[in-house]
Length: 542
Image (tube, rainbow, N blue to C red; front, side, top):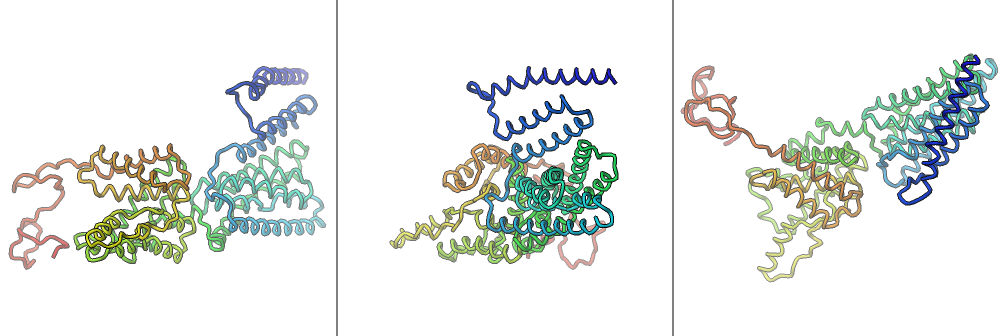
């Protein structure tokens, strides 16, 4: 024992020496001279608390308390790092009144649930003593609050909510500090892991991670307080595991109700909307196949670009799939759906044509509201054209007015009503929609021409000020252009000439070698009722 104690003292002395030699000069350099490392207030506060704790423990406490305190401190500092220092995206932007009401509802529901657990524990303590009261404090599924807030708002908001629920637990139960630390750790872990999944089961998985971290924190606190090997610890551990798992199940059950009541849209809901078997997408495919294919390509563009710049790729993809939903009502008036049919705008006045094109945005917003696609998708549908001008019909109207000597048309009648894109996802959909539509006009889409087209279209949108109200930076635009170039080059790739397997002459370019011969004989039936079988009518024509 004397040898172990001596080794421990030497280790502590080595830690103090390293602390003086390496850490103190860095801290001193944080406040001196240009180019120094500037630390934020939470960093300095956390380092002071952790250092004071270590100094006190190394000089007075026995080793079990030291081990437990170090584990517990590491867990708490990890949660503080996740809350303050990690750059977590906030998808909801500024907190709205709807989100504040949602937070209050979650707080009231879980506070009532915690109070119910408290009353149940008081009733059970009559027969089982203080053991039931202490254990039931860890069984309350308070982690369901950070889970739901992280799912519908942001992970950072969910972690801050965990801090509030830790304070709530400390007020309602005895042993306030232990419960505060426990619910802070489990809530932050749950909010952190719920963003990694796109299904309802991800909520339960986050609850499982919360249970593991809560068990570790509980063991560390029991080790420090000296009740690790006791019946009270086993009861509290079972209650903690059950409560965290129940929090994930409770959040999974409450999520659809919150979506319906508050109009939120979560990752599992977006995954359902992204399915190509969705009735709206099926209707778009049958009635407006050109628009459907255009939406698929735009979805591919925005998904890849969103991943590159760190935006919400799932939301951007789903919004791109539904951004032209308003074209269903007058699909034949849009060029991608006309095919070989005559252009219907040739018989219309330019102002009427512009009115039809502008109306598809409003009709898309109305259709999205009828089918409850979610407010973020509705907003992107209304913003994906911003306040851009329909140049083709405006110039046509300008020429008509000059030929007839009439007054020049009002330019505002040929402009989309807006608003401009307010989020990065909306800006991505606008850019991808513009670039994909313009790429269809390329006669010979070589890589150089595609690169020039992408650059010119993005520069045009930027110069018009359409991206002024979203958070896309010049660095983001450079990455977006690079991704668009790569995907469009893959779409407009060149095919090789296949070898000739027909004896009737030279092989035509890009003709498929798998195409069956139309010559009579073989397995071809003889009773087709066609006079000349070598000149068969093409399928789908005539």
